[in-house]
Structures are given as C-alpha cells and as structure tokens.
Length: 122
Image 1: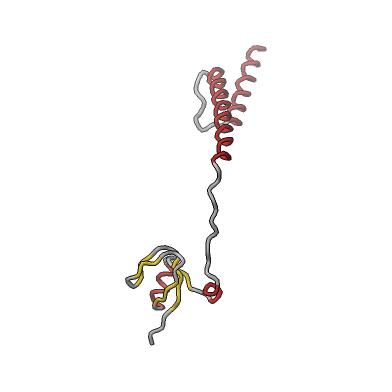
Image 2: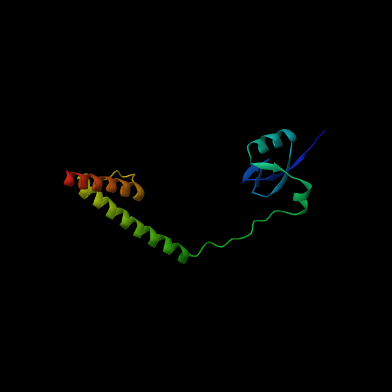
C-alpha cells in the first residue's frame, strides 16, 4: 500500500530530506504530490518527459552595442520634450504638467498660440 507518484521539481525545494533543484525527478506520496503541484513547486512526470529530459537552450546576452542607439534616441527625445515644455512655459506663464508628453504639449501650445492670435485681431 506504499504508492508513490513520480514528480518533476519546478523550483528548488527540499522534500524528504533531499535538496532538489528545478528539473530533478523524485517520488512522493500522492497526498504530498497534490500539495506540491498545487503550490506549483512540482509537476507530474509523464512518460514523454521521462524519455526526453527537458533542457533549456543557452541564449547569450544581447550585445551592448545594440542598446546604445536606443539610449541616444531617448536623450534626443528628452531634449525635444524639454524644448516643448520651455515653449509652453513661455506662452502660458506656468509650467506644463509633468505627465504631459509631446502630443499633449503640442496641442496645448497650439491652443495658446491660437488664443494669442485671436486676441491680437480683436
């Protein structure tokens, strides 16, 4: 009556005094298996998984040279946003809301410029 269920560790854990790493195969009592699978610490082993162990392919980190152009674009975008903020402040006499981005600033500047031109004509 000593039934055992075969499990695969999904995360590092200790079971029955054994330190297991992710991917280790071990046997557990059915009640323990329900708890471990419910807590997502382990999964039931299938026959296909026993025949072919799962390996993660090694992926090298992305080269740093690819990240540099993105940073340069971000600084030029920040400079353009700063220029829009300064233009808005000059027209409105107050600072722009900090959450406003370029499209909103451009729309607010257009409203202010239209208001200034209509006052000059009246």
